[in-house]
Image (cartoon, rainbow, N blue to C red; front, side, top):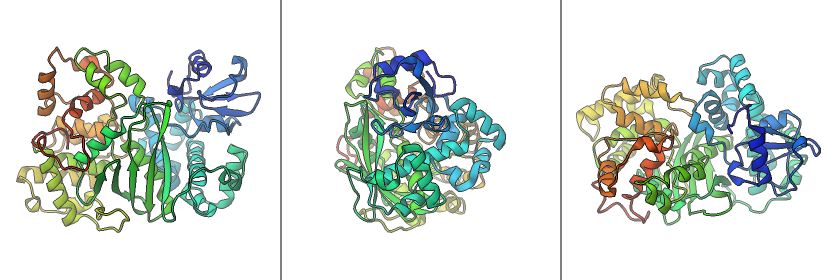
Length: 499
């Protein structure tokens, strides 16, 4: 079963009949007799096979004339994990659409980012996902609007523009068409509200979700000024298309329910960045992961099995800015985690843009590529060769010779990175895993990984872990990360387990 226009109807119907929550967000069920579409786990009575069709995206169901079910809220689901696994043009385009590229740059901008003509891209997405770029972007705007309406006190006019609509009229018409309800009627159903000045969003994730260990990893690697963490939460600044912002995420283990939710509080200079901010934090959390598939594969391995069973739902931490991730990776080459944090913090203090945030300790944006490209490598607090590599990388990022946005082709990005002086396979592959969401990366030369594998014994064979080698790698690193996010690294600070 894949998130394309070629869904296996029999497999989809079996998932619907069993109300299997693992497939929420992977496909949608449209019911001819009611005119609505649902998630596979909808608790309503299962319709007869002859009365249903299956769609790869909510936008495809909208385009076919169906409205969203008011009971199961089918758009409030994680995205399909297959987009990260396949990394095809459809998946790359979907990530860019979720980031708001169509709203900011139009279909021409989206097509340019993925290297196709607008007409060819439209045909491809219609064939693979059942809807053209504009319809996919419209569905994303509608989902963003519904979440903001039901979970914040923002005036409805502000919600319209925060969700990416160009006018209030378009906002009203779209929500009536998709949800069979006006924005005011949707607001009457809300169950939580946000304090004034914040936008609070519940980000759906598949369960189990090892939120505590994700928090520990992020806290262990945080850069002072850009990130802070405490018991149960992580916060950071965000460099967004229309201005700066910040976010605080509450992270805890979620073990039951099929689909859970992570609460994120955003503070944005411009509400138009709401969708982009939300999508970037979802990527940071690896929200589209299918832990059932990953854990089922790794838990039977003779070497990794015990680690996988000990921490079900472990995520691969993503990123909110690909350029930042690449720069931090170079900073962390061949140094301890604590050393990399210290150097990155000095660079942030010297070259990052100062911003005001409501979270103590969040004071700067990470320096952008253009700023770093203008620096003298000799002025950086690192060995001269690494300084040259960092400035060379920043120059390539600023000039567009290396692209690490959500639509980048992984092979092209890896090749462009390896062509730069001072960038080797470890760095390129680490960037692919964290910046580009590659689920199948392994770092055989990583010293920390080799030490953990030696301690586990047995006969480790990374080929057995395909296509989830990135998750296998995180299980190995997970044994080295301290448990308490409020405490700085101590005894394990001399280990290099990813920058």
